Length: 264
Image 1 (cartoon, rainbow, N blue to C red):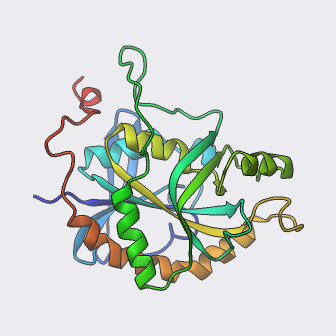
Image 2 (cartoon, rainbow, N blue to C red):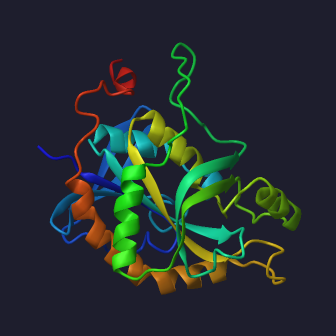
Image 3 (spheres, rainbow, N blue to C red):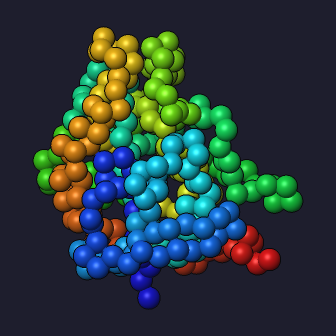
């Protein structure tokens, strides 16, 4: 039996109707209840989580990342693709382009970052937190669709939010090798890696970060940029999901790393 493909959608995509036969469902995880949509996307069983909740009401620092990733784990998803609006930290990564991630820098402060707490000490290697397999599939399809891809080896800088970053913070991120900056990529990617999931994010570059363009940042410009990109993102997901569903399940021969949380 094939596993469902998991999608976590963020700003600008969370209101898009992707599934042809969506059912609104709820699952109880050890970290809280999660609402999700399940249905068919391009003929593939697909689970969609709206990162910011129905109506986009949950700010980045209050998202229950552990419950979201645990829900995908419990529902049997292994391949997880996400969307994320980001700001550019490099002049070569232009607004309106797309980026795929290869590494991250974590500047978040108040979030629960791990599934492994007292009594279950595990140090998870993060050398390949982003899936090279998903990167290959996504990059190839983005090229086919002629989508402007600035980088497939991006470094995602995770800021706490919900405020935008200061110009001096942006200069620090640039000096440390950051490619784009956002507010939701961590701990989502690290938790997914702890869970043994194949994870990659489609980063949609909406603007240059603070201090780079000389103009103040607004949430409206992010929404406007995402509205312009939404049709392309939908087309990309419709093309990619069947390819992802056909990939071999690398967890089949391995013990599921979070099953200990479900045995109590």
